[in-house]
Length: 413
Image 1 (tube, helix red, strand yellow):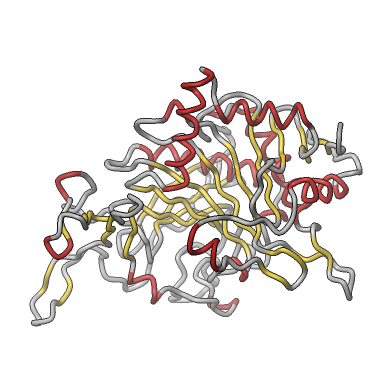
Image 2 (cartoon, one colour; image 1 turned 180 degrees about the horizontal axis):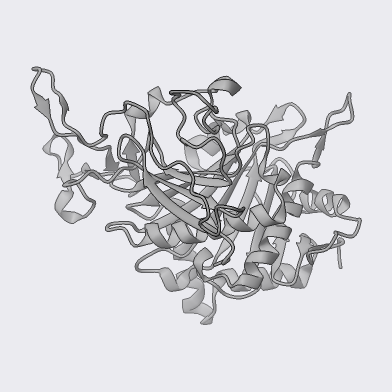
Protein backbone atom coordinates (compact mmCIF):
# COMPACT_ATOMS: atom_id res chain seq x y z
CA UNK A 1 0.00 0.00 0.00
CA UNK A 2 1.30 3.45 -0.94
CA UNK A 3 2.33 5.25 2.30
CA UNK A 4 1.43 8.57 0.68
CA UNK A 5 -2.32 8.02 0.84
CA UNK A 6 -4.71 8.19 3.76
CA UNK A 7 -8.03 6.43 4.33
CA UNK A 8 -10.52 8.24 6.58
CA UNK A 9 -13.85 6.57 7.38
CA UNK A 10 -17.03 8.27 8.56
CA UNK A 11 -20.80 7.75 8.42
CA UNK A 12 -23.39 9.52 6.30
CA UNK A 13 -26.64 10.75 7.83
CA UNK A 14 -28.49 7.49 7.09
CA UNK A 15 -25.71 5.30 8.50
CA UNK A 16 -23.88 4.36 5.30
CA UNK A 17 -20.09 4.32 5.39
CA UNK A 18 -18.08 6.98 3.53
CA UNK A 19 -14.32 6.68 3.08
CA UNK A 20 -12.16 9.57 1.91
CA UNK A 21 -8.97 8.42 0.15
CA UNK A 22 -6.50 11.31 0.08
CA UNK A 23 -3.23 11.54 -1.81
CA UNK A 24 -2.67 15.30 -1.39
CA UNK A 25 -1.62 17.53 1.45
CA UNK A 26 -2.51 18.65 4.03
CA UNK A 27 -4.73 15.57 4.28
CA UNK A 28 -2.23 12.72 3.83
CA UNK A 29 -0.16 13.87 6.82
CA UNK A 30 -3.25 14.43 8.96
CA UNK A 31 -2.66 18.16 9.21
CA UNK A 32 -6.24 18.58 7.96
CA UNK A 33 -9.27 16.32 7.72
CA UNK A 34 -12.14 16.29 5.25
CA UNK A 35 -15.61 17.14 6.50
CA UNK A 36 -16.90 14.11 8.38
CA UNK A 37 -20.45 15.13 9.31
CA UNK A 38 -23.39 14.84 6.90
CA UNK A 39 -25.98 17.62 7.43
CA UNK A 40 -28.75 15.98 5.42
CA UNK A 41 -31.98 15.06 7.25
CA UNK A 42 -31.90 11.44 6.07
CA UNK A 43 -33.68 8.62 7.90
CA UNK A 44 -31.53 5.81 9.29
CA UNK A 45 -31.60 3.21 6.54
CA UNK A 46 -32.29 0.37 8.99
CA UNK A 47 -34.94 2.18 11.03
CA UNK A 48 -38.41 0.53 11.08
CA UNK A 49 -40.77 1.74 8.34
CA UNK A 50 -44.57 2.15 8.28
CA UNK A 51 -46.42 -0.98 7.15
CA UNK A 52 -49.71 -1.18 5.20
CA UNK A 53 -51.69 -0.95 8.44
CA UNK A 54 -49.78 2.08 9.68
CA UNK A 55 -47.77 0.11 12.23
CA UNK A 56 -43.99 0.14 11.93
CA UNK A 57 -42.26 -2.97 10.62
CA UNK A 58 -38.56 -3.89 10.35
CA UNK A 59 -36.68 -3.02 7.18
CA UNK A 60 -36.31 -5.97 4.83
CA UNK A 61 -33.43 -6.00 2.38
CA UNK A 62 -33.51 -7.15 -1.24
CA UNK A 63 -34.15 -10.80 -1.99
CA UNK A 64 -32.48 -13.07 -4.51
CA UNK A 65 -34.05 -16.14 -6.08
CA UNK A 66 -32.37 -19.16 -7.62
CA UNK A 67 -33.32 -20.08 -11.18
CA UNK A 68 -33.79 -23.87 -11.08
CA UNK A 69 -33.08 -24.12 -14.83
CA UNK A 70 -29.59 -22.59 -14.67
CA UNK A 71 -28.69 -22.47 -10.99
CA UNK A 72 -28.18 -18.69 -11.24
CA UNK A 73 -29.08 -16.39 -8.34
CA UNK A 74 -31.16 -13.36 -9.43
CA UNK A 75 -31.35 -10.40 -7.00
CA UNK A 76 -34.71 -8.57 -6.97
CA UNK A 77 -33.79 -4.91 -6.39
CA UNK A 78 -37.08 -3.12 -7.07
CA UNK A 79 -36.08 -0.01 -5.10
CA UNK A 80 -33.44 0.80 -7.74
CA UNK A 81 -36.22 1.99 -10.05
CA UNK A 82 -36.17 5.25 -8.05
CA UNK A 83 -32.42 5.93 -8.24
CA UNK A 84 -31.03 9.19 -9.61
CA UNK A 85 -31.07 9.29 -13.42
CA UNK A 86 -28.86 11.64 -15.49
CA UNK A 87 -29.10 14.69 -13.20
CA UNK A 88 -28.03 18.17 -14.23
CA UNK A 89 -24.35 18.90 -13.62
CA UNK A 90 -25.23 21.29 -10.77
CA UNK A 91 -27.32 18.59 -9.07
CA UNK A 92 -24.98 15.61 -9.39
CA UNK A 93 -24.84 13.70 -6.08
CA UNK A 94 -21.20 12.72 -6.72
CA UNK A 95 -19.92 16.30 -6.98
CA UNK A 96 -18.39 17.97 -3.91
CA UNK A 97 -20.63 20.09 -1.72
CA UNK A 98 -21.00 23.70 -2.82
CA UNK A 99 -18.97 26.09 -0.63
CA UNK A 100 -21.25 27.98 1.74
CA UNK A 101 -24.33 25.92 0.94
CA UNK A 102 -26.44 25.01 3.96
CA UNK A 103 -27.73 21.79 2.43
CA UNK A 104 -27.52 19.77 -0.73
CA UNK A 105 -28.36 16.16 -1.53
CA UNK A 106 -24.83 15.25 -2.47
CA UNK A 107 -23.24 12.08 -1.15
CA UNK A 108 -19.88 13.67 -0.25
CA UNK A 109 -20.18 16.47 2.33
CA UNK A 110 -16.79 18.13 1.80
CA UNK A 111 -16.25 20.85 -0.80
CA UNK A 112 -13.36 18.91 -2.33
CA UNK A 113 -11.87 15.42 -2.29
CA UNK A 114 -9.30 13.27 -4.08
CA UNK A 115 -11.04 9.89 -4.19
CA UNK A 116 -14.12 8.88 -2.22
CA UNK A 117 -15.87 5.57 -1.54
CA UNK A 118 -19.34 5.19 -0.08
CA UNK A 119 -22.07 2.61 0.24
CA UNK A 120 -24.57 2.91 -2.60
CA UNK A 121 -27.80 4.66 -1.61
CA UNK A 122 -29.73 2.34 -3.98
CA UNK A 123 -27.91 -0.99 -3.58
CA UNK A 124 -28.79 -4.20 -5.39
CA UNK A 125 -27.22 -6.07 -2.46
CA UNK A 126 -27.55 -5.09 1.20
CA UNK A 127 -26.71 -6.76 4.49
CA UNK A 128 -29.62 -5.90 6.79
CA UNK A 129 -28.95 -6.77 10.44
CA UNK A 130 -30.62 -10.08 11.19
CA UNK A 131 -30.98 -11.00 7.50
CA UNK A 132 -27.44 -12.12 6.63
CA UNK A 133 -26.70 -14.53 3.81
CA UNK A 134 -26.36 -18.23 4.42
CA UNK A 135 -28.21 -21.51 4.44
CA UNK A 136 -30.31 -20.57 7.46
CA UNK A 137 -31.81 -17.68 5.51
CA UNK A 138 -33.09 -19.83 2.65
CA UNK A 139 -36.86 -19.76 2.11
CA UNK A 140 -39.19 -21.05 -0.59
CA UNK A 141 -41.22 -18.97 -3.04
CA UNK A 142 -44.89 -20.07 -2.91
CA UNK A 143 -43.74 -22.96 -0.68
CA UNK A 144 -42.33 -24.71 -3.77
CA UNK A 145 -39.00 -26.54 -3.22
CA UNK A 146 -37.95 -25.67 -6.78
CA UNK A 147 -37.84 -21.95 -6.04
CA UNK A 148 -35.30 -21.11 -3.39
CA UNK A 149 -34.90 -17.57 -2.09
CA UNK A 150 -32.28 -15.95 0.11
CA UNK A 151 -31.47 -12.44 1.30
CA UNK A 152 -29.32 -10.60 -1.28
CA UNK A 153 -27.05 -9.86 1.64
CA UNK A 154 -23.99 -8.30 0.05
CA UNK A 155 -22.69 -4.77 -0.25
CA UNK A 156 -22.51 -2.24 -3.09
CA UNK A 157 -20.03 0.62 -2.98
CA UNK A 158 -19.40 3.60 -5.25
CA UNK A 159 -15.81 4.69 -5.95
CA UNK A 160 -15.62 8.31 -7.13
CA UNK A 161 -12.43 8.81 -9.12
CA UNK A 162 -12.31 12.61 -9.13
CA UNK A 163 -14.14 15.68 -7.86
CA UNK A 164 -14.13 17.01 -11.46
CA UNK A 165 -17.56 16.29 -12.92
CA UNK A 166 -16.32 16.42 -16.52
CA UNK A 167 -13.24 14.22 -16.13
CA UNK A 168 -12.81 10.56 -17.05
CA UNK A 169 -10.49 7.87 -15.75
CA UNK A 170 -8.25 8.34 -18.77
CA UNK A 171 -7.79 12.01 -17.81
CA UNK A 172 -6.26 11.15 -14.44
CA UNK A 173 -2.58 11.38 -13.59
CA UNK A 174 -0.60 8.19 -12.90
CA UNK A 175 -0.43 9.34 -9.27
CA UNK A 176 -4.22 9.45 -8.98
CA UNK A 177 -4.63 6.19 -10.89
CA UNK A 178 -2.27 4.56 -8.37
CA UNK A 179 -4.46 5.88 -5.56
CA UNK A 180 -7.47 4.19 -7.16
CA UNK A 181 -5.56 0.92 -7.55
CA UNK A 182 -4.79 1.04 -3.83
CA UNK A 183 -8.43 1.86 -3.13
CA UNK A 184 -9.64 -1.16 -5.13
CA UNK A 185 -7.16 -3.34 -3.24
CA UNK A 186 -8.07 -2.02 0.21
CA UNK A 187 -11.81 -2.32 -0.42
CA UNK A 188 -11.41 -5.82 -1.89
CA UNK A 189 -9.65 -6.91 1.28
CA UNK A 190 -12.22 -5.28 3.57
CA UNK A 191 -15.27 -6.57 1.68
CA UNK A 192 -13.88 -10.09 1.34
CA UNK A 193 -13.87 -10.29 5.13
CA UNK A 194 -17.62 -9.59 5.44
CA UNK A 195 -19.75 -12.57 6.49
CA UNK A 196 -21.38 -14.39 3.57
CA UNK A 197 -19.39 -12.64 0.82
CA UNK A 198 -18.17 -15.08 -1.84
CA UNK A 199 -16.82 -12.75 -4.55
CA UNK A 200 -15.71 -9.11 -4.91
CA UNK A 201 -16.06 -7.40 -8.28
CA UNK A 202 -14.57 -3.93 -8.95
CA UNK A 203 -15.83 -2.33 -12.16
CA UNK A 204 -16.50 0.87 -14.07
CA UNK A 205 -19.35 1.61 -16.48
CA UNK A 206 -18.58 4.55 -18.80
CA UNK A 207 -21.00 6.15 -21.26
CA UNK A 208 -24.75 6.45 -21.82
CA UNK A 209 -24.64 3.59 -24.30
CA UNK A 210 -23.64 1.31 -21.40
CA UNK A 211 -26.56 2.56 -19.31
CA UNK A 212 -24.69 4.94 -17.02
CA UNK A 213 -27.13 7.08 -14.99
CA UNK A 214 -24.49 9.37 -13.42
CA UNK A 215 -21.85 10.70 -15.85
CA UNK A 216 -19.50 11.85 -13.07
CA UNK A 217 -16.31 9.70 -13.22
CA UNK A 218 -16.91 6.78 -10.88
CA UNK A 219 -16.91 3.02 -10.59
CA UNK A 220 -18.52 0.47 -8.31
CA UNK A 221 -17.61 -2.51 -6.16
CA UNK A 222 -20.00 -5.39 -5.52
CA UNK A 223 -19.43 -7.77 -2.62
CA UNK A 224 -21.57 -10.67 -3.76
CA UNK A 225 -23.15 -13.37 -1.57
CA UNK A 226 -22.80 -15.88 -4.41
CA UNK A 227 -20.34 -16.68 -7.20
CA UNK A 228 -21.50 -15.13 -10.49
CA UNK A 229 -22.40 -17.31 -13.51
CA UNK A 230 -19.41 -16.15 -15.57
CA UNK A 231 -17.01 -16.89 -12.74
CA UNK A 232 -18.63 -20.28 -12.18
CA UNK A 233 -18.06 -21.12 -15.83
CA UNK A 234 -14.45 -19.93 -15.69
CA UNK A 235 -13.80 -21.96 -12.54
CA UNK A 236 -15.23 -25.05 -14.23
CA UNK A 237 -12.94 -24.60 -17.21
CA UNK A 238 -9.96 -23.91 -14.96
CA UNK A 239 -10.63 -27.02 -12.87
CA UNK A 240 -10.90 -29.21 -15.97
CA UNK A 241 -7.67 -27.71 -17.38
CA UNK A 242 -5.82 -28.38 -14.14
CA UNK A 243 -7.12 -31.94 -14.06
CA UNK A 244 -5.80 -32.50 -17.61
CA UNK A 245 -2.51 -30.62 -17.42
CA UNK A 246 -1.74 -29.81 -13.80
CA UNK A 247 -1.40 -26.14 -14.78
CA UNK A 248 -3.29 -22.85 -14.35
CA UNK A 249 -5.63 -22.07 -17.25
CA UNK A 250 -5.34 -18.28 -16.94
CA UNK A 251 -1.54 -18.54 -16.72
CA UNK A 252 -1.47 -20.69 -19.84
CA UNK A 253 -3.78 -18.28 -21.71
CA UNK A 254 -1.49 -15.34 -20.94
CA UNK A 255 1.62 -17.28 -21.95
CA UNK A 256 -0.01 -18.42 -25.20
CA UNK A 257 -1.07 -14.88 -26.12
CA UNK A 258 2.43 -13.59 -25.43
CA UNK A 259 4.01 -16.37 -27.50
CA UNK A 260 1.71 -15.71 -30.46
CA UNK A 261 2.03 -11.94 -30.14
CA UNK A 262 -0.59 -11.37 -32.82
CA UNK A 263 -3.17 -9.91 -30.46
CA UNK A 264 -0.84 -8.36 -27.86
CA UNK A 265 -1.38 -4.59 -27.92
CA UNK A 266 0.60 -3.31 -24.94
CA UNK A 267 3.41 -4.63 -22.76
CA UNK A 268 5.16 -3.25 -19.72
CA UNK A 269 7.54 -4.64 -17.13
CA UNK A 270 4.75 -6.27 -15.14
CA UNK A 271 1.64 -6.29 -17.39
CA UNK A 272 0.44 -7.42 -20.82
CA UNK A 273 -2.72 -6.24 -22.60
CA UNK A 274 -4.12 -8.46 -25.34
CA UNK A 275 -7.28 -9.05 -27.33
CA UNK A 276 -8.36 -12.60 -26.41
CA UNK A 277 -8.34 -15.13 -29.23
CA UNK A 278 -12.09 -15.72 -28.80
CA UNK A 279 -13.12 -12.10 -28.07
CA UNK A 280 -16.87 -11.70 -28.29
CA UNK A 281 -17.34 -7.91 -28.04
CA UNK A 282 -16.74 -5.38 -30.87
CA UNK A 283 -13.89 -3.97 -28.77
CA UNK A 284 -12.40 -6.14 -26.02
CA UNK A 285 -9.04 -6.19 -24.25
CA UNK A 286 -7.73 -8.17 -21.29
CA UNK A 287 -4.95 -6.83 -19.06
CA UNK A 288 -3.08 -9.38 -16.94
CA UNK A 289 -0.07 -9.29 -14.59
CA UNK A 290 2.99 -11.34 -15.46
CA UNK A 291 3.23 -12.71 -11.93
CA UNK A 292 0.59 -15.14 -10.69
CA UNK A 293 -1.53 -13.24 -8.17
CA UNK A 294 -5.08 -14.04 -7.05
CA UNK A 295 -6.41 -10.53 -6.56
CA UNK A 296 -5.67 -6.81 -6.33
CA UNK A 297 -4.49 -6.88 -2.69
CA UNK A 298 -1.74 -9.33 -3.71
CA UNK A 299 -0.09 -6.85 -6.11
CA UNK A 300 3.21 -5.40 -4.87
CA UNK A 301 4.17 -1.73 -5.10
CA UNK A 302 6.05 -2.07 -8.38
CA UNK A 303 3.13 -3.86 -10.02
CA UNK A 304 0.70 -1.20 -8.79
CA UNK A 305 2.87 1.65 -10.06
CA UNK A 306 3.23 -0.05 -13.43
CA UNK A 307 -0.51 -0.78 -13.61
CA UNK A 308 -1.38 2.88 -13.07
CA UNK A 309 0.68 3.90 -16.12
CA UNK A 310 -0.22 0.95 -18.34
CA UNK A 311 -3.96 1.11 -17.68
CA UNK A 312 -4.07 4.83 -18.46
CA UNK A 313 -2.28 4.23 -21.76
CA UNK A 314 -4.73 1.45 -22.62
CA UNK A 315 -7.78 3.61 -21.86
CA UNK A 316 -6.42 6.54 -23.86
CA UNK A 317 -5.81 4.27 -26.80
CA UNK A 318 -9.36 2.87 -26.53
CA UNK A 319 -10.70 6.43 -26.59
CA UNK A 320 -9.11 6.83 -30.03
CA UNK A 321 -10.37 3.51 -31.40
CA UNK A 322 -13.32 5.04 -33.28
CA UNK A 323 -13.25 8.28 -35.27
CA UNK A 324 -16.23 10.38 -36.31
CA UNK A 325 -16.46 10.03 -40.12
CA UNK A 326 -17.53 13.66 -40.55
CA UNK A 327 -15.45 15.64 -38.07
CA UNK A 328 -12.51 13.26 -37.82
CA UNK A 329 -12.61 13.61 -34.04
CA UNK A 330 -12.05 10.64 -31.76
CA UNK A 331 -15.19 9.18 -30.18
CA UNK A 332 -14.89 8.54 -26.40
CA UNK A 333 -15.47 4.82 -26.06
CA UNK A 334 -18.41 3.62 -23.95
CA UNK A 335 -17.03 0.69 -22.00
CA UNK A 336 -17.27 -1.66 -19.06
CA UNK A 337 -14.01 -2.39 -17.25
CA UNK A 338 -14.10 -5.12 -14.61
CA UNK A 339 -11.53 -6.86 -12.45
CA UNK A 340 -11.78 -10.66 -12.33
CA UNK A 341 -10.37 -11.76 -8.98
CA UNK A 342 -10.10 -15.08 -7.18
CA UNK A 343 -13.23 -15.95 -5.23
CA UNK A 344 -13.22 -15.82 -1.44
CA UNK A 345 -13.96 -19.50 -0.72
CA UNK A 346 -13.73 -22.82 -2.59
CA UNK A 347 -12.08 -22.45 -6.00
CA UNK A 348 -9.87 -19.56 -4.90
CA UNK A 349 -6.75 -21.47 -5.96
CA UNK A 350 -8.09 -21.59 -9.55
CA UNK A 351 -8.39 -17.81 -9.91
CA UNK A 352 -5.87 -15.38 -11.35
CA UNK A 353 -6.24 -11.59 -11.46
CA UNK A 354 -7.02 -9.96 -14.79
CA UNK A 355 -8.98 -6.99 -16.13
CA UNK A 356 -11.53 -7.18 -18.92
CA UNK A 357 -12.44 -4.00 -20.83
CA UNK A 358 -15.11 -4.18 -23.51
CA UNK A 359 -17.52 -1.99 -25.45
CA UNK A 360 -20.92 -2.38 -27.09
CA UNK A 361 -19.97 0.18 -29.77
CA UNK A 362 -19.29 -1.70 -33.03
CA UNK A 363 -18.91 1.36 -35.29
CA UNK A 364 -19.46 5.11 -34.97
CA UNK A 365 -23.14 5.56 -34.09
CA UNK A 366 -23.83 1.80 -34.16
CA UNK A 367 -24.28 -0.45 -31.13
CA UNK A 368 -24.12 -4.21 -30.82
CA UNK A 369 -27.56 -5.32 -29.67
CA UNK A 370 -27.94 -8.74 -28.13
CA UNK A 371 -30.85 -10.12 -30.12
CA UNK A 372 -32.37 -13.55 -30.72
CA UNK A 373 -29.72 -16.22 -30.39
CA UNK A 374 -27.45 -14.11 -28.13
CA UNK A 375 -30.04 -12.91 -25.61
CA UNK A 376 -32.20 -16.01 -25.82
CA UNK A 377 -29.55 -18.72 -25.93
CA UNK A 378 -26.33 -16.97 -24.77
CA UNK A 379 -24.83 -18.13 -28.07
CA UNK A 380 -22.44 -15.35 -29.05
CA UNK A 381 -21.74 -14.15 -32.59
CA UNK A 382 -18.90 -11.68 -33.09
CA UNK A 383 -19.24 -8.76 -35.51
CA UNK A 384 -15.48 -8.60 -36.10
CA UNK A 385 -12.33 -10.64 -35.44
CA UNK A 386 -9.93 -10.35 -32.50
CA UNK A 387 -7.09 -9.74 -34.95
CA UNK A 388 -8.83 -6.67 -36.40
CA UNK A 389 -9.41 -5.25 -32.93
CA UNK A 390 -5.77 -5.86 -32.02
CA UNK A 391 -4.47 -4.37 -35.28
CA UNK A 392 -6.34 -1.13 -34.63
CA UNK A 393 -5.00 -0.86 -31.07
CA UNK A 394 -1.48 -1.67 -32.25
CA UNK A 395 -1.78 1.06 -34.88
CA UNK A 396 -2.80 3.56 -32.19
CA UNK A 397 0.24 2.62 -30.13
CA UNK A 398 2.76 2.78 -32.96
CA UNK A 399 4.55 5.71 -31.33
CA UNK A 400 6.72 4.97 -28.31
CA UNK A 401 4.93 5.46 -24.99
CA UNK A 402 6.48 7.95 -22.58
CA UNK A 403 8.13 7.20 -19.27
CA UNK A 404 6.54 4.55 -17.13
CA UNK A 405 7.53 1.43 -19.00
CA UNK A 406 4.46 0.63 -21.12
CA UNK A 407 5.24 0.11 -24.77
CA UNK A 408 3.23 -0.91 -27.84
CA UNK A 409 3.36 -4.34 -29.36
CA UNK A 410 3.48 -4.50 -33.13
CA UNK A 411 1.50 -7.16 -34.97
CA UNK A 412 3.52 -10.37 -35.23
CA UNK A 413 6.26 -9.08 -32.91
